[in-house]
Structure formats: structure tokens, C-alpha cells
Image (cartoon, rainbow, N blue to C red; front, side, top):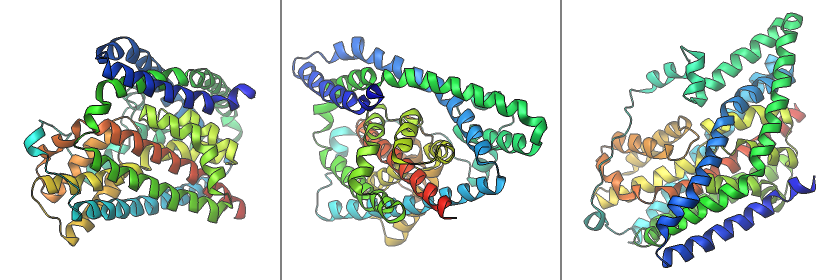
Length: 405
């Protein structure tokens, strides 16, 4: 138990050490050293996380559904979860637009097109909402697992969890098998989580040494704008909802979620942070079956940080392109970013694809996305941290709502 409780401390030490080593390598001209000899260890750690993500989501969601023992309760939890995420994402969009317009109105968004140019960027094709809806339902279950399509994995989990429950006594063998396999996966998660300080140290050293000082130059104000939005949203929406609906103080909430927040900040993957998020949610008082349902779903559809990023980046890119957004266009940004964030995969860099969709909706040249490609990782770190914080807050709120019901 003592070792588990020391994990946040070890992660924080690794974070600070990684920044220090990265700065030393940056000023000593040893950035290639971090990319060649340190980053690979971080890549190995992330690969291990990706390796367990699909079985964790599949088994934890099925186990969570079976633990509820009632399909009505599954539906109740699902409705509350989706409603919470939609509301917070819409609020996130508004916060992002407010701060972006404040910065733009104050002349703090410089025109960087002359310095950086427009990098080539080819976004994935977006064929409309109905196409996305059809793609959620897999034609090949194993294909969903191989491609780590988390929305499809969640659909598979819902179908199998509901079917096993409805099978009653005849489904007992499958129920026991899921329970046994999930117990094994939990042990595997504990091992991989114990390696997290190594991944945090190596990645932070690499990011700081290869990008840190360069990207904090002319684009510092854009990054600052997004991070102000992240912080305001976390304090006003997440900690406030935890206090109002759960009766938990903001200090206790952020302290309990700290390990997951730091891990998400460095890994830039809400899906990869699932094991740590589950542990933090459990320590804060979320019921295991509800957390097992809410957290995997949140890693796929709860992208408040991504929504703020999309709004700030859209206003910035529009400013650089000489386009001034009207009130009507900003409303379109809110709606589009909310829907786009729901479909954003919980992996590093996925927000860039959704940003391209928002730009296309407004008629802004997607080529201008190249202006912030270089700094996307810094945006990604903050938005992933916010996304994971929201997942934990939602699991706590839904737990309290279900208890009252």
C-alpha cells in the first residue's frame, strides 16, 4: 500500500528531473542524445500501455456492466455520463472562445505566417455524421481490437455485457471467465503503472530538449491562452461539480486526481492513462463498477481539453489568415467542436484531425493548420490532462447520483 501511495511522488520527481535533464541537453546541444537514447524507453512504456488498453476497456466495461446486475442501471449510468460530458464540453468551447477573443482583441495573437509558412497537412476525410455513426458499429470484432478503435470496442463491450446478463444462469461461465480475466489484467496494469516514472522522465527530457525553448518563443501567447482556458475549466467546472454534487473540496479532488493528471500530461493519451485514472477514481470514492463504465467511455467521448484547444486554435489560425469570425461562425465553432470532440480518439495527436474538420466547416484554409503543428504536443499535454480530470470528476458525480437514486 505504501508503494502505491508513493506513485504520485515518484511521478512528480520524474517530471521535474526530466525537465532539468532536458534543459541541460537543450543548452548543451545534446537534443539528439535524448531522441536517440532516452525517448525509446518512453516509447517502450507507451507501447506497453497501448498493449493493455483494449483488454482493459473491454473487460472492465463488461465487468462493470455485470456488476450493476441490471440493464436499467446501465442505461441510467450511460445517460447521466453522456449528459455530463456534453454539458461540460459545450462550456469548454465557450471558455475557449472567450479567452481566444480576449487575446485576439488585445492584439496578443501575432501573425506568424511569414515566419513559419503553411506546412502541408492532409487531414483524414470526414464523410458526415451518418458515416461516423455507421463506423461505430464494427463489422469485424477482431478488427476493432487490432485497430484499437475504442468506440467500436465500447460497443462490443456493451453488447457482450448485456448479452451475458440476459443469458442468466447459462451465461455464468462467461461471467466467471470475464471476472477471472479482468483480475489478471489488473495485475498486469499494476506492473505497467509501476514503470510510469520511467516513461514520464524519458518523455519529458526528450520534449524539453528537442522542442522546449524553440516552441515557447513566438507561439508562447497562443499556448498561454489555451492553458488559461484549461485551468479555468478545471477549477470552475470540474472541482465545482465535485463540490456541488459530491460534497468534495477542490483541494481533495485535485490531490486525489493528481497522479492521473501528471501521467496524462506527459503521455498525452487519455486512453493510455486509464489504469491510473481508475486507481485515482477508486481512491476518491467512485464505485468500481461505475468507474469501470464511465472512465473508458470518457477516454473516448469526453474531450473538453480538445474542445478548448480547437476553439483557441481556430481563432488564432483565422487571425493569422486574416479572417475575422462572426458571432454566427463562433456558434458553429461551439457546435462543431462539441460534436468533433466526442469523436476524437483518446490517443496522442488525435485533436489535430478534429481541428481540421472544424476549419473546413468554417471555410478556413486547412493548410494554415501548419502554423501550430510544431507546438501541437504542448497543446496536447494540457488538453489530455484536462480530459482525464473530467473523466474522474464524472465518475464521482455519477456515483453520487446513482446512490441518491
